[in-house]
Amino acid sequence: MVIVGGGFAGLATARSLSRKLVDVVLVDQHNFHTFQPLLYQVATAGLEPADVAYPVRTIFGRSPNITFRHGKVTAIDLDARKLAFSDGTNLAYDQLVLASGATAGYYGIPGARDHARPLYTLSDARRLRNHLLGCLEAADARPEDFDGGAPVFVIVGGGPTGVETAGALVELLDVSVRRDRLRIDPKRTRVVLVDSGDSLLAGFTTTARRYAEQTLRARGVEVRLSSTVAEVTANGVRLSGGEWIKAAAVVWASGVTVNGTLGSSLGLPSGAGGRLEVQADLSLAGHPEVFVVGDAAAVPSGGRRSGPCPQLAPVAIQSGTHVGRQILRRTAGETTEPFTYRDKGIMATIGRRAAVAQLWRGPVLRGTLGWLAWLALHLVYLVGFRNRLVVLVNWAWRYLDWPSGPRLIVADLDVGSALDD
Image (tube, rainbow, N blue to C red; front, side):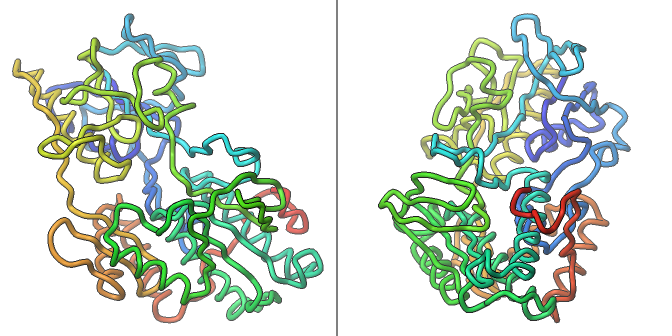
């Protein structure tokens, strides 16, 4: 059998089949797994790219029944049960798990795809970090190009990624002035968080949403609610009301879509955001040998809940684990079972010693307690002992003093032309 995708869902499926009586080929265009919840820390120079990535071959080095193939799948022939790769080769399968994920969704907003900077892959995070640091260096060298050394950064999307990025970016600006002595005007430099909803963190409780907004505002973030982006250009954004915000960078954290990914190329029935419709056991109608998991699927909630699950890491992990178990049931000659999502809660951090942890049952944890809960959970799910240790030491050191950190522009570019990156 073949698993396409080495994200949370694909990894969970492979792990549930590790050392079982089934031969598995895990395929991905990258030879590493990325811990996406911490990409914003890479983008804001809090962590190195290697801290949130781990080689797939190493993960399954002791699983003799799992092999890894590095390559990009460009097409799937469902009738012939065959995958086509970008290098012209093919791979047959008897059972397939499609965990190809999603990509940044721009919703047809003019200029967004060309000028906004997404934060969905490790490459996105690296490019964004280079650009942000390049902008700060450029503002130091040529303050006249940045309103006298006061650059503006706009973040579109008030979900967890947008909130976390906004909080981390404010901290980056603070340490750049305080520790790196960059000559930018901290009183006029702006971080603007734009969201079309009437509150941040949709899906959280009212208490959690209010705490996130108040904390961001207290830390200097300009929160613009009920504001829709009408256009993005190389120099900023225009809101639906006509207001123009000149920006050194526009960070796009406004949701994802399956359209434009491998999943959308199948031409099968799909729901909102292009998510493929699946059966109760997460297989495709008419193709029971094909399962779709994670962000690529409109994963049904199951149980007493209705509608698809949100596109979150816990959903991806649980759906991948479920499919692995169903494959083993089929191997044993048993029928498959429907998927039921077990909601254990959601979390978001606003910055140092500030987070919200909304558990499925119990109170909402806020402030330092919520932040510690957020830290602990992310360390548990982070892949690799080395990564856990490095990230823990990094967080502890930053908590005590915030050292120089990985604020390195690692790219073949001239700092003077950073805005053209």
